[in-house]
Each structure stands twice: as C-alpha cells, then as structure tokens.
Length: 185
Length: 185
DNA sequence: ATTTAAGGTCAACCATATTGACATAAATAA
DNA sequence: TTATTTATGTCAATATGGTTGACCTTAAAT
Image 1 (tube, rainbow over the protein chains, first blue to last red):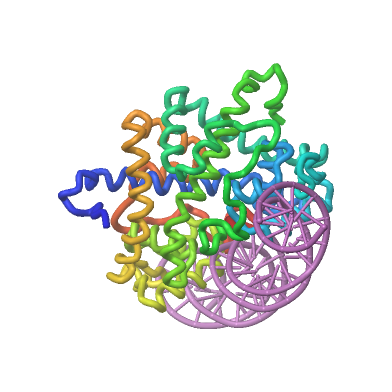
Image 2 (cartoon, rainbow over the protein chains, first blue to last red):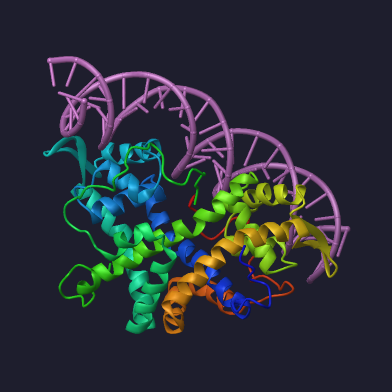
C-alpha cells in the first residue's frame, strides 16, 4: 500500500494537487455530459444511447463486438439500447459481406442529425476550453488524460482508427466485460 | 448553431482533435472510476457512496445542502446513500451549533479508512499520470479541465475550501438540481 | 405568531447496469 | 462432413442510483 500521507513519501506535499485532479475529473465529466443529457431526454434516450450513437458515428461499420469492447458493458445491456436505436431508425445494421455473423453498424441520416446535435454541445465546450487554454495546455491535457486511461485503451484514443472496422482484440469470447462489478456512472 | 463542419469555420481542421478530447474524457472517467468501484462492491456500496465519502472527507463539517449543491442530485437520492453510510457508521451527523437545522457531516474513523482505501487508487493513478506528463503538462491539464467545468463550479475546484463548511449559494430553495433531466452516469 | 429554510421520509417510477441460461447462424477445424 | 467455435440475440431476474411528487418536523427569521 502506497502511503500517500506519510512524510516520507515525496507526494505528500502534492496531496491537494492530486485531489484537485480527482475533483476536476468529477466536475468536468458531470458538466460535459449535462447538455447532451437534456437533448437526449427529449427523444426519450439516455446517456447509453449517446455513447452508441457517438462511437458508431465515429467508426462507421463497427461491429457489435467491437462496440462492446469500447464500451465495456455486457451485450445484454447494449442490446436494449442498440435495439431501440435500430428500431427507431437511428442506427442501421447490415451483415458484414466478409463474415455473415458480424453486423456492420452505421448511422442513418436521422442518426447523423442527432449525433451532430449531441456532439455539437460537447465539441463547442471542448473547443472553448482548448481555445482559452492555448495549444501548449492542450498538449498537456492530452498527455495527462492519456496517462489516466488504462494502457490497453490508449491506442484507441491516439489512433483515430477511422473509416472501416478492424478485428477486435484476440479474446472476444467472454460475454462479460473485464470489470465484473456493477457500473452505473 | 455553430457549424463545426463547414469549411468556413476555422475549427474544421481540428474536428479530430476535439473528438479526441471527447474520447479522452470518456475513457479517462471510465478507467478512473473502475478501481474504486471494485473496492466499493466489496462493502456493498456503489459510486454514489464514494462521492459522498469523498466530499465529506474533503470538507469535514459539510452540510447536507452543500453536499447536494456539489453532487447536483436530489435530496431523496442522496438520502438513501447517506442514510446507509450513517447507519453503518462511515459518516457522522451532528447539528450545527450555529444553526440547529443544519447537520454537520464528518467521516468516522471507519469512514476515513474506507476513504483512504478508495482515494488511494485514484491518487496513485493521477500521481502516475502527472509524473509521466511533467509539471507543465499538468498545468495545461488543469487549465483545459477548468475550461470544461461550468463556470459556477470553477471556484469550487480552484479554492480548496477546506476545513469547516461555508454557506451555500443563495438559492437552496429548490428540491431539485438545476438539470431537470435524468442522470445515470 | 407566521413564514421560511434545512432536512427527512414514503412511494412510485425509470435508466442502465449486472448475472445466468439458452438459441441461432456462420465460420472454422477435425 | 461433422463438430466446434464465434458473433450475435434474447428471456428473466436483480441491483444501483437517478427522478418526481407529496408530506412532515424542527429551527430560524420576520
């Protein structure tokens, strides 16, 4: 156990700085999701739908398994959300021509419109923060945030990986995500 | 509506940078809360309990209203969580000597132990990211994150506001938080 | 003495996550 | 070709943590 409180540990003096980091993550994430949540509520959707719309929009042709890999939720949990989006024609499903088991997910025009509306608020918020902070600060932000992300997911963020889908990581056997505990937030 | 896609807007070329920011927030927050979630599950608690423990630990003597102000949830929602923590002696309540209606919340020794265990994982993660990124990057991280946080809450993050409680913002009349929509994440 | 403020509580409901079990179709291996 | 594995879907039960609405108590303020 790392004793962050003992005088021996050189991090002692930075406890407050580190706690500020914790709080920044809490407040930033809360406010960051606030505006989209309002828009989503008008369509009867929630944050889970937003995440699906976002990542499908970002990676057209994404498969269900790849999406599960990104979101780290169970397929049962995804199915409700994805099912609603497909049923209401926000997301389109069609079999992968190279592998009939896989479904390629794409946004419909309707889905793209919603995606734009949702992302707009977040893009604006980030653009504003980036502009106010300046290019160097943005680079620092990237580095720190990447350091917080688990190593396995870093490449996902650094490499845009746009366009068509690509095979997921070797183990897609399991029906559940790595973290076996409940999520909710 | 800000058209972030039109060629006229100078932000066009940075769409990918901005979307990377969106994704960094998603992945960082998810991984940041992952470890505490595991610990909490062992005590039968969830993320909501963590937030209460964290902020009460950070601001001993905090009142219920102030806590609601920070968390931006309804008091009914808080009551379940806070009630469990008080009942199981993680949090202590006693009337404010200056205003008998207010309850001063503090962590018990048991509560402090859990708080330490939970925070340790997050402090370590942040310390690691800070150390790897360097002091300048950390400053940039702070600036960008603060820019993302709603203005009203910025002072809460910048000014440690430690020790004893202080009056909440003028309007604590309402029973509900500003954002009327559902939260879940 | 009345009103306002801080807090608590009961009840119903909703969104999103979980586990476990089972089903189907397509690809791959024996 | 048959058997197995992979990708996906689905049913059911359960948990967490949000929400609204209504009502209550106690203490402070007017």
